[in-house]
Length: 441
Image 1 (cartoon, rainbow, N blue to C red):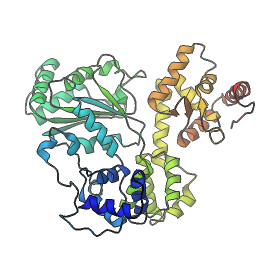
Image 2 (tube, rainbow, N blue to C red):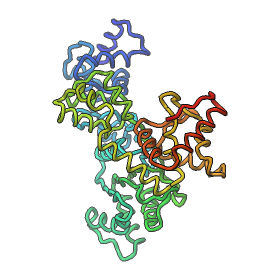
Image 3 (spheres, rainbow, N blue to C red):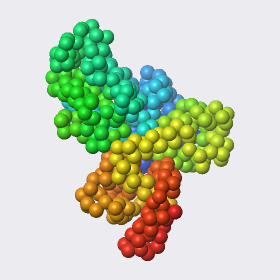
Image 4 (cartoon, rainbow, N blue to C red):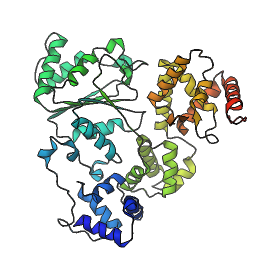
């Protein structure tokens, strides 16, 4: 009945079937509640959603809602969910304060149903990798969820032997044994008999610049082999800002986490009762690239320092960067400088291009900034390293820097000894291959 009422309303308003999702979303802008396009699409196709989402659509379309009559596949069979995870993850964003990750949840469901045992969620800091992983594991009905947070500094990482020992003693009430191999065998047996979710959070401090485990922590590979074994019932999510490219273990899937869309930011601001004009929100979203951490920081500052007045906040702060996000960017630059100086050099040099004048540059423009690296293969490797880290944006052979990265790149380039030379090399490239002009800082 609920789906029929919605469709009848759309038909009465002469809404083209291809435009129904966007039309409903637009109608929601006049209400105080927002849901994602994916959730709207689920409602229109009679897929399982939570009741509150249906109520929001009814309110946006001015349809009266009757409980137990208009619910669209709200109830879920949790017994079926054990074998079909697509129907199990709850999407009650209002309760969980968790927005904009429906597509990512669906992708994780697909991977787990394809019998993937270990997945690396990878992406820059602040995207919400850990939040997504925890939400997912906590809502899959596992008998037990184990969590390991790697230390922020490489020197503070706990040994894998201690981790396995702690898991066996605290969660399985078993002594690990004298040899690490015995401890792993005992852990594997438990994982074969119980459904266990495992989170290994913030892996990158244990990795070198090639994405391989640092020698001191290479025994983590033995744990990963157990977790990835086809006979275990466990499912492991690893979060990392950097890719895990260790050829000593090849049974791991990578999932790159994208930035949150504007609609997710709308939902979040509405949930926290912060009124904001959509154009203003889009400006914030562009500046911070849909970063989840930024979204939280902005709402906190608006509510705490500006009594919920988003317009006043943006008038005073649009040229500033929230400190938490600034620190994330600085830390990423510092780690890159330590691990891969040539990639760091290129990232800083890319600050010479005026992306407001030239929105995107070609790969040749990147290569031109590596004039002091004679080996062509090495230059391509440097570019690939930055692509893997997602420290610049790229699509269809074009590259550009996000505004926050640009700001830090320019700052570091100006403070280096290379400012004049980099601009000169870039100008030579443009004169020789593009426009004959110099679009530089």
